[in-house]
Amino acid sequence: MTDSLADPHLRYSGTVTPGNGSGAGAASEAGAPRDIVILGSTGSIGTQAVDVVLKNPDRFRVTALAASGSRIGLLAEQAHRLRVRTVAVAREEAVPALREALRGAYGAGEPLPEVLAGPDAATELAASPCHTVLNGITGSIGLAPTLAALKAGRVLALANKESLIVGGPLVRAVAEPGQIVPVDSEHSALFQALMGGTRAEVRKLLVTASGGPFRGRSRAELAGVTPEQAMAHPTWDMGPVITINSATLVNKGLEVIEAHLLYDIPFDRIQVVVHPQSAVHSMVEFTDGSTLAQCGPPDMRLPIALGLGWPERVPDSGPVFSWTEAMSWDFYPLDEEAFPSVPLACHVGALGGTAPAVFNAANEECVEAFLAGRLPFTGIVDTVAAVVEEHGSPDGTGLTLSDVLAAETWARARARELAAARSATAPAEARA
Image 1: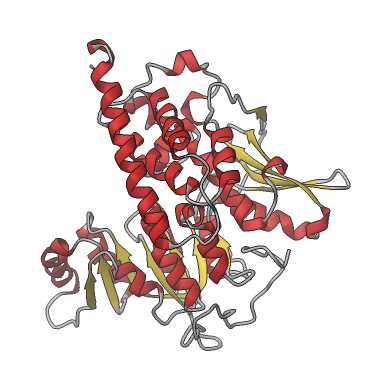
Image 2 (image 1 turned 90 degrees about the vertical axis):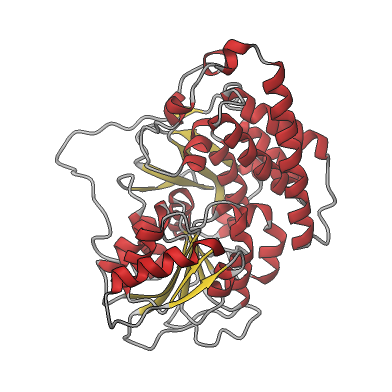
């Protein structure tokens, strides 16, 4: 699959495939721990990545951390335990508290790491000298760091699916084949299963979904879902936006778009299969009728470790199944009437251009409105669909970063307007 962004058949030999940048300082010295930059270090992906690194000090060395600035104490603790050179926060107002927390964590006499701040701080770190950048930022704000890492020739361990989805053509323009190693459990599974055949032998990608907390419910039964119910995911422990996206299956729709962009497989050959146990993370069906599945306990440390260590596996990265105990795994077709987000995402992905950015931005606003009680659960995807329809069919040629940002700004504003209008007209008992 040499024209894929994530090519499992390309194996690195201690150096990094350069992008459009010089790649200076990208490769760690032979035999030395691999230098890693972690973006979004205090989030779910970031904290588990730190755990992987701390358990493998002979393999990995973190040179820099970036976070939003909402969990200053944890960021300072991570910086001290990892002995990083640089710490970055997106919120400039968090710098005084960060410096105080760092002084408390390091103690008297210990030199403190360099502190960067502002909306471009993570982007600066993404291009800094290292071997691999793990982008664990949530949301489309991860696009600029993704582009910076690729242009600098870094290997990109990508957990920030939104940056690829909203900026697909931009990412394609700068990424070398195989420069991206996916960290999402589903795309890591596809990455591994695709090693079982050539591109011409792939018939279908099968992306598994747990079904979220509301698997089996009809659309009518979803109307009264509360934020507390939607936050209770049966399998994964994630942040609020991703958890709600998993409940609506918007997350699965985004993953279908991501799979299309990563592996260059048409949408009509990518299928979502509901698998409640989350043991089979995804599958590849080949033309001879064989299907290869990647399986493992639902623990994100496994794909994170593969993303950081590729092309080598990191021993004992996470738990394993006990094959001496009885297990049963179930698979169901997706109910597209109850969960229309997946077909909507396929439509958006096929439109291309700025449509995926509109889809993602509108959804983020609608999730916020739902969590605040201003929008019903089924209103999330309904409102997103309305914004996408109003946006229309964009021109997908010549896409720029400013085009993406402008489309996102419009989509957010329009989604807020539609959510507010719906809240104003809803019966009082529905808003309670």
